[in-house]
Amino acid sequence: MFNEHVQPRAEAKAGTRARVLAAADRSFRAHGFAGTTVRGIAADAGVSVGTVMGVGDKDALLIAIVDDWIAAVHADREPAAELPPLTPGEATVRLVEVVRPFVTYFNADGDLSREYAAVLARGKHRSRTFGDLGDELQADFEQVFAATGCSDPAAAARSLYFVYIGLLFATSGGAVTREAAAERLVEAIGQILGEGVPQ
Image (cartoon, rainbow, N blue to C red; front, side, top):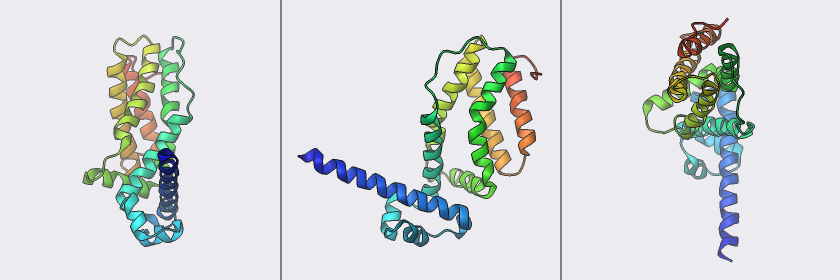
């Protein structure tokens, strides 16, 4: 009997959170981060301002939107199967494909990506992107590096992860073009594999 009351309450809370985040996402994309208000999010979600703040302030909402999207991409991927041996060129193609959805997402709205980076830099809110979700991405990288016969696939995966994060923020901030970032990612993979730049 106790569980019957807890479950609907938990489901209702999760539903409210999802509505608030969806409304925040729509507003951020339509009005920009600065042009979005908690009051506007509340009106769109059909909840009170207090309910929105219970989910989080604007910074926390942006972090949650990105984290949830990245988590969904990871969840939609096929379970990792053992890879056949890969050449450096094949590994490069696979690694680029692993990060493609994230790069596309962050490059879709440069202003919002810059706000996301600024929120992280303020250090008030933590992102799962650099916790368990980052670990999942590194595990994907590690599997590919292992299939090349790399002597330390875990270290290679960590190195590529930090290169990728740096390029992602440099691109979203406009310091590096998407094309240059893609070239640098391929160069980094080749250097990590000790192969130079794969042809």
